[in-house]
Every structure is written in structure tokens, then in C-alpha cells.
Amino acid sequence: MEVILNKDVDRIGKAGQVVKVKDGFARNFLLPNRLAVPVTSGNLKKLEEEKQQRALQLAKTKHEAEELRDKLARLSLTIAVLTHEEDKLYANIAAQDLAAALGEEGFSIDKALIALDEPIKALGIYEVPVKLHPEVSAKIKVWIVKK
Image: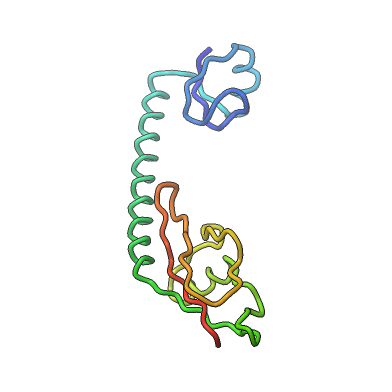
């Protein structure tokens, strides 16, 4: 029996795929649990409409991410920190600190999107990558200065 998956099913397929499964598996598990629907012309048409909507939504989010990338490219973020006598930082600068500083500048970016390999441990100028979208990333120029 051929079915259209509504959700990802382990070892069967991903949501939106048309897969061929045994009749008993479809009747007893997939269909009652609403994990799949039978292949009919109406369901195939609905699947195509959903794919088009998803493609439009992805294009919109990518465009918004590109606009945000352009704004972040013009941003120079300055963070003033306390230091020891040899200009070593008292505390490392982590992705959470950068997200908070970006929040003060008016950008709401989740700390998980900031791709900081290791915390910043010294004064200086750094370029920190930010993953805005699977296909769009930006670099933020961060200045770490003495308070």
C-alpha cells in the first residue's frame, strides 16, 4: 500500500514522502496514529500545495536572514570588560555575552546561533560568525576593550 507520511517515521521515511509499506503496517499503525494518509488524488494535490507553501516560507525566512546579515555587517560591537594588570580578562566572553550585547543594540539573536568556537579570553578585535539561516551566515566585528 502506498501512503503519504504526515510525520517522520524511523526507517520508513520523512514527512511529505510517498512510501510503499505493507498493508497491515499502514492499516494498523500508520493510519490510526495519523502518521500517514492513503495516496489519493486529493491527498497528492494537498501535498503539492503544502510543498509550495513551505517553499514560499523558506524563501521569506532566507530573505529576512539576508537583510539581517547586511545590517550586522555594518555593526561594530564594543564590549568593555575588567582586566588584570597584564590586560587579561577577569571573565571570558561567551556567546551568551555577545547575544546580550547584540540585544542592547536592538538585535534579538539567540546565543545558539552565534558560532563562537571558544570563549574570547583577551582584549582585541574579533570577527564572530553568526548562523542566521542554513544558507546565510554573517560576521560580527567585536571589539573587546578595557573598562
